[in-house]
Structures are given as C-alpha cells and as structure tokens.
Image 1 (cartoon, rainbow, N blue to C red):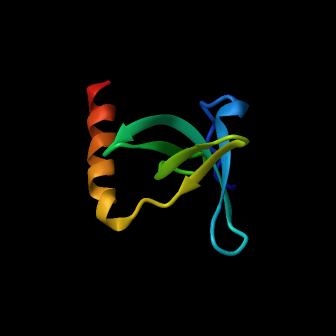
Image 2 (cartoon, rainbow, N blue to C red):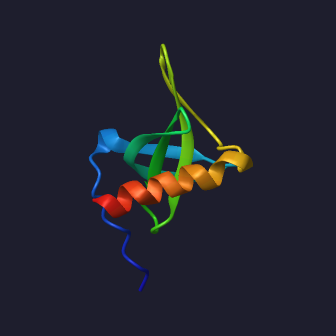
Length: 88
C-alpha cells in the first residue's frame, strides 16, 4: 500500500506551487517572510516532504516574484532563517 500524503498544516491561501525546470511542480506552504542583508526572503516548506526552500521575495504592483538567492548571499540568508526558527 502507498504512503499517505503529508497533511497540510497550511490554509489554502498560504500554499504556493513552485515550478522547477521542466514540468516538475511542488506545493509548498509559506512558513514566513524575513529580512536579511537589506532584502526580503521567504521560507517555503514542501507539502510532500520536510524540505525547506528559501527564495528572495520581491513585492510587485500586481503581486510578488520569487528569485533564487545568489550563491554569495545564501549562507547569510540561511543563518538568519535558522536563527529565527531557533528563537521560536
């Protein structure tokens, strides 16, 4: 028998569909947004497994955009995220 899908702890309006190269899609819950190094970032948790994805979060007039975090900034962003999570 197959494994039961992970139950979402996120309401529908806090779930995004991430689209990766090709046609791979993944639903992820919004854990929260935070600031690091003068930019805004967002933490997303996969609804399929326990993976966490960090992206640069950019507000737009008609919504928002997610960008990959440049390699040179990723460690500092990840450290800020972990500090926030560990403080809770």
